[in-house]
Image (cartoon, rainbow, N blue to C red; front, side, top):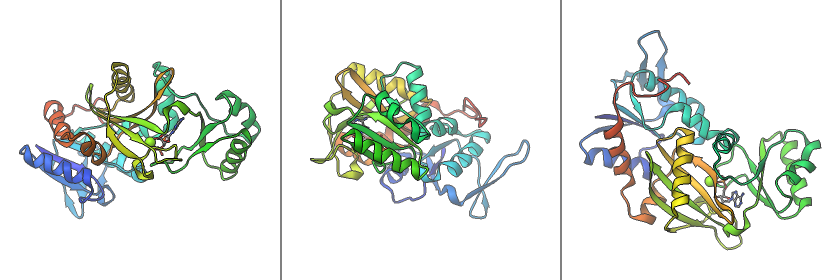
Length: 301
Ligand code: ADP
Ligand code: MG
């Protein structure tokens, strides 16, 4: 199969592993920097251009679209969908997952456990917002943040008020969330492919830090997850419409709580922690599922 990998950099671990897995399984991968891809939108003959050339048709596309290029990256992916290529994750599902509040609303509607979360626009509503999520300590998150940047733990009500006021003053979109203390600075990353959790790792924050992101110095280790956690992760990916997802779960007293669902999960941490060939499993999923024009939305979203 001809497989396009939408990635800005061939040297990134995940991109390299996907290229390797394609080649090992006899496919032809091509890495495309979405920002160098451009397209002609004409009735009945969608085309894709790359660095001055018209691209031939691809059987499948693997989007590895960074948060900062979501808008343009998704446009490129949609064009491939219109051309009939099978997207590992669909453009509509990626847009959904990139909007943290929309994701939580969708997950809540389907009864998936979440930390209590509030969102408000006006500083006059701060007091009630804090009360709504159960008071301090609480977590404040910038909606556009990734890799733990823009996630703040406010230990007291006073600290929470000032941080929320400061963010609102800067016109930043934020959400306020119940702090799950019993998680102990750890979360569980479940890698979902299709309807299975194929790998899971525990990420533990550095001492004195509550954010477990590997980019913030967190460390990864193997973990055995419970059947409830497994079912929660699979359901969360399904609700988001993602074939491949990194579902992050906090272990709370009341059960597993989904914190976020990532549509371009990094492969390095999880492959190293678990010793599994996740890239190979992704390509295998494509082999089983890629048929022309199999996108549910056919680029409509
Ligand atoms: P990002 O998108 O920047 O990774 P997250 O929402 O995943 O933001 O938060 C980063 C980290 O902070 C999580 O991996 C987790 O360890 C910690 N964290 C986030 N929200 C909570 C919460 N409500 N309670 C406890 N810890 C949290
Ligand atoms: Mg995260």
